[in-house]
Length: 605
Image (cartoon, rainbow, N blue to C red; front, side, top):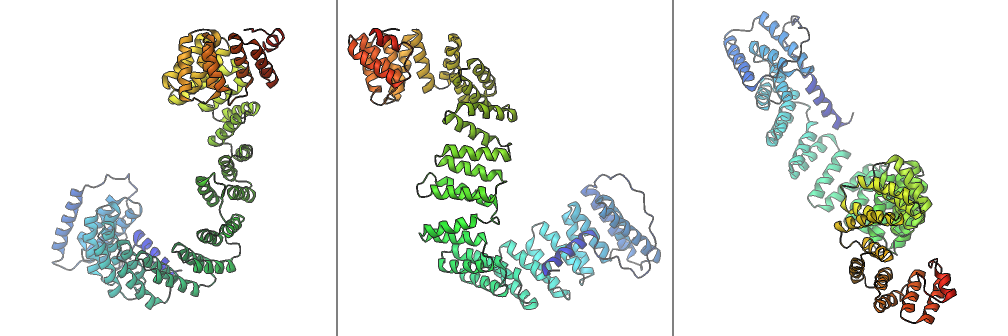
């Protein structure tokens, strides 16, 4: 048993039983009552009254020697009280123990057990009084000192607890082991010099101890005495040359205090003991990074990641730190390599593939990111955030079939997640399935009532989808709802104004919305085209031409080109219009009327 374990065992014995109730005569058997229901807890007033009566009875009995009969009764009450302590029925325990005390108040064991019971039941003042009495009655019993010190510590009366330990060590033979408890108490109070002196005293008595050296090292660090702390560390290494943990602790201490050559030396010492130790590699990687040696730093951290001994959670934490610095051309590849090593070394850990997906997402490799997320889901499909990432990437890559497949799979697990219904609806809309899209969007909208921003996205998408179904009142109402939440919603402003222009309805409102949009985004060719087309429908051909020519500076979209041709035709320039229509057809994606326009050299609407 280690020297530090002894005190724990003693305390356990202290709490459970304590010293025996030693008497001169053989104790008479007590009548053990049958188990009862737990009595109500005695009030403080009732406990004081019991103690007062016991003291009165004790004073009366002290006038004459304790009779044999009273001694036997006292012992019976004591044994019964101890039994109730073990049953944690402290009220009944105190009742029996105080009766034993009334008969024999000068018995140290009775005072001790009453003190312990009061401590366990939370009556610290009475615990203190009886604990002091027990020590006074039997100053050679270590248990009594330990209980009294514990009572003081429970009341945060640490100076008194320290005094008890000092008395114990002086008064009780072979009690030097309690120097360690005393030193820990000094440390808890921040009395570091006293703790050091006590540890020195313990080492003189018991010789060098690893735990003591380690604690002294921590004290020196708190005192900013780095040289002493490092000296203790070297002592630990010298006395335990095969203990790599002490070597690593010393290397880390050198590293954090910018003693880089020593940190490298001691880390390599650790690697001689354990060539695959990942912590030594991590220390070296950090030191080389601070020395502006990125190649060696990268080499060491990769070697650390190759080790299964470096926990996957530690690797994830390191990769999260990388993510905070990304995207960064100097770090992107290293982060991706480390993520790849993590998935290879931990192929059954979903979190390894999840963090790899995050790394790939931040560095712009969406396809690789999704592949990693899907592997994470295969290992653990319970994390909604990973499903959400997959769905977002499907939408960004415009891979509609994947979007529908993954949203439907995710909705089986998370049917109450409104964003999944939103993207499922978007997928159906892109697949030209507006009825299915409406069903998903309307259901998801009901789940998003506590999220106004998401609700506005649903309304905007519903506006688009109802337009496809030619349900224009519902389409307009959805757009209006979206703009009520955010009057600058670009998608709602653009689509609403454009669809109104196609229908030739509310053109003044359409012009107001499209003009607001191009004012906010003067270089966006889509919004310029929308505003130009609204003006065209209002027969403001000159204004339309101006907007479309701005749009064509950055756009090669067939719809914009065809619109420009239509404007030119209305402005009396049919030859130029024909050239634009031909260019739109060649580009691909023009309206179904484009062939008739070209063939007849005439505008059709």
